[in-house]
Image 1 (cartoon, rainbow, N blue to C red):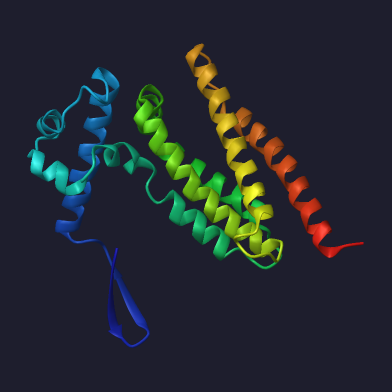
Image 2 (image 1 turned 30 degrees about the vertical axis):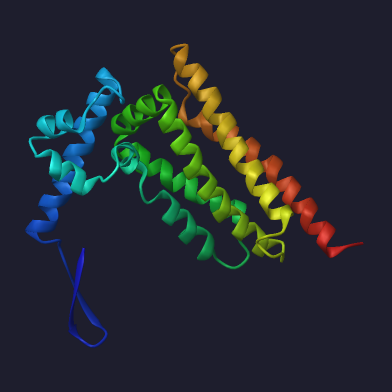
Length: 222
């Protein structure tokens, strides 16, 4: 969205221009056709040239939008980390990091529900390719650092202190466990419902919150 200024302090919000809309449409088309190809014939077996042909663009155009092949796969979830950073940094007074994390997760669920089929296809492609799973794990570590910073503020500790880092690692381990259970159920032909996933998440967050509360009490002393 573009913002034009009519006069100091008075913005006029206008819709994106034709060029911007065309670029966004091209990007979305590349992602959709690429994920379909990756799911159908395999990520490693699919070439950029094949993606370009399916999207009716040149290979150079694909590479311009996505310098690395894995960028296409993870474009679907791009922006999640930035939204988590914003949720933690702008959380209202009195709200701790774990509560902000849960709110962020619920909002991310709405993003997923907006195009469930596309996200399901992305999940399928990632689960089938070891290199993509490793890339996803690297992204998770970035989320872990964001959580550690927020928890350090909650505990009035420096970000380098091991306590908030351990709590953040525990949170990410919970996500890994939920993902593994969901993957096993999908493999058996049973797709976990949103309610089941959120229930597991609530249990994990309650456990981690207990640990964070204990750490906070330890900071206060007797």
